[in-house]
Image 1 (cartoon, rainbow, N blue to C red):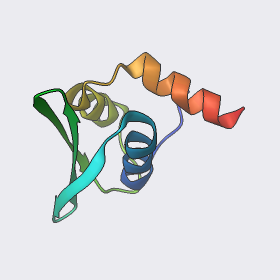
Image 2: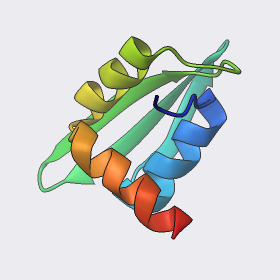
Image 3: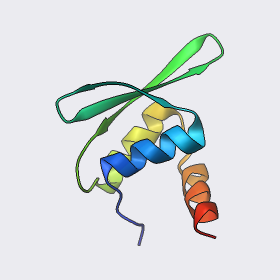
Amino acid sequence: MPKIFSGKQIIKILCREFGFYFFSQKGSHAKLKKREGNREIITIIPIHKELARGTLKGILELAEVDEQEFWEKIKSKKS
């Protein structure tokens, strides 16, 4: 069973491991941004105590981060 993450944990992981930076926040949703060449990649993260697996998948899809790569980075940090 996969670990349950909070919104703040996902923000830290995306910033440290995937080159995103905090851009803005409106209410309980944070916007992260990353430049890749001439384009910007933006993802929205709800700042909740627990994120559902589908929500995490949606965040990673917007961020253009492969889910398998995400889990590999998490595992490599633990060891």
